[in-house]
Image (cartoon, rainbow, N blue to C red):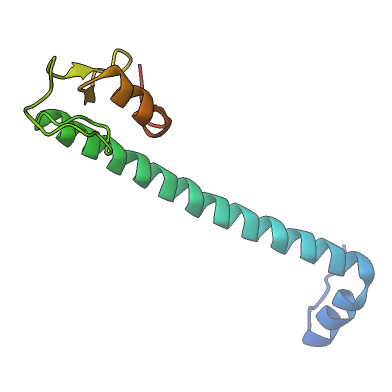
Length: 110
């Protein structure tokens, strides 16, 4: 097999050919997409971990997990009831649980 010495001139000639341009464009696009996806995945994991820590803290200080709860802490009629699925967060009422479900379901684990 003959050896080929790559020079700037050789590389420039290869890049001028349409098939090389297309291959490099696709390789660059794939590389960029995979790099961005890895960063997004990492950020999502960090956000999930933060959400879980917040939920654990809220449960420990006996607050309703619904951020928009209209009741004051300590004035809950029936105390707090934990999420039946994960047993981490607690709610003062069924309406608070329903209101918070869109947020909590993203991190709720059985």
